[in-house]
Length: 78
Image 1 (cartoon, rainbow, N blue to C red):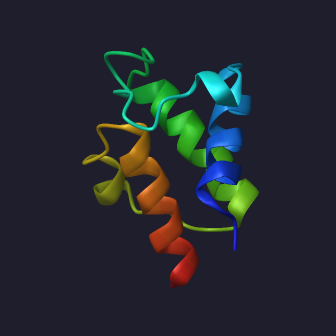
Image 2 (image 1 turned 90 degrees about the vertical axis):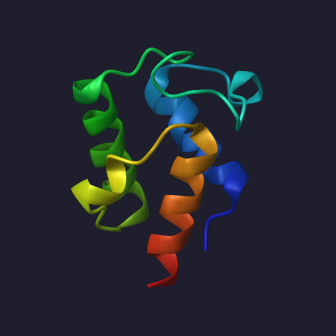
Image 3 (image 1 turned 30 degrees about the horizontal axis):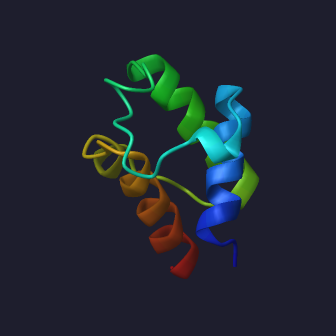
């Protein structure tokens, strides 16, 4: 099972950022500038990478990078 660090690396890679520069508490919209389309692209990329299915309803509650990590980890447990 991927660790939080591996998930952060995957997020950073998709966003073109250095994993060390990606704060777990960073706000997806305000700090990372992710609009609905960019967030959907990121979720699609992560779904493929980790072979999970993310429910659109779950995605609507994502506010921080940490929320995204928890969502992926929870889906990996299912």
